[in-house]
Image (cartoon, rainbow, N blue to C red; front, side, top):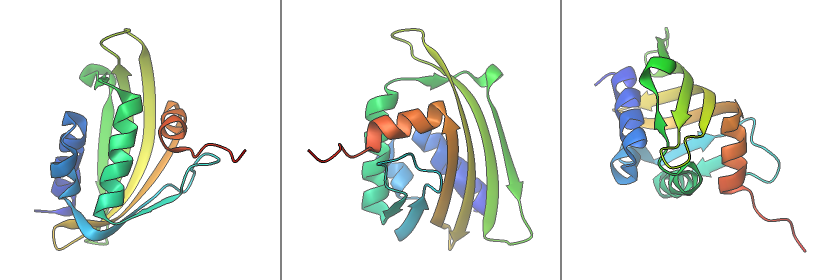
Length: 142
């Protein structure tokens, strides 16, 4: 599989909420970076287990929101580096319980080697940043 195909498959699994299958697309020593992490949120997750745990924490905040395909866009750019892809995500999601709509915009820079993601930089802002803050921020010290 190509890096683009690996990325798209793990994204499909992420949307479906299958965190074990999604994590299997990451190398055991993969790293996810959050270069624009909000205050109190880790900016790095090392290893498949930490990446899975981070994704599960995000699921608790995200709930059962589902992307609205006709209002969402995904563009994956292949680069001259055969291991590297860049993905632009602009997704409108709706919470089926409340009907609340949110727009998530992210840029992913992903490196794939031997059909496993080894490094994933996740640049996010707006509603995405707030969701990450709610899910992953450590409480302030007393």
